Image (cartoon, rainbow, N blue to C red; front, top):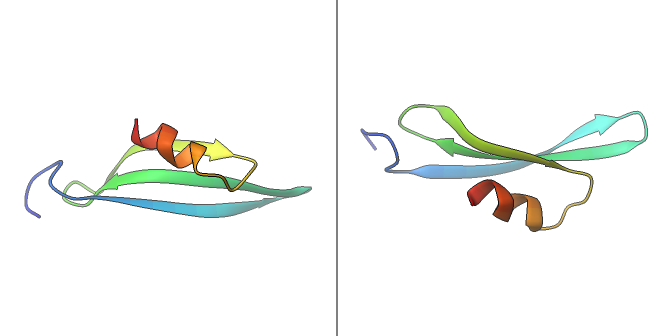
Length: 54
């Protein structure tokens, strides 16, 4: 884990809003600690995760 694009991680978390939640999915590079991609969704379905990976 000493160079970029060697290990990625994905996380999905929810952000409370005044009327429900918004879900944030992010792809992270462990070596550089950078966010490579992110997507917001108002549902907890796999499409936002897949979109972030693509």
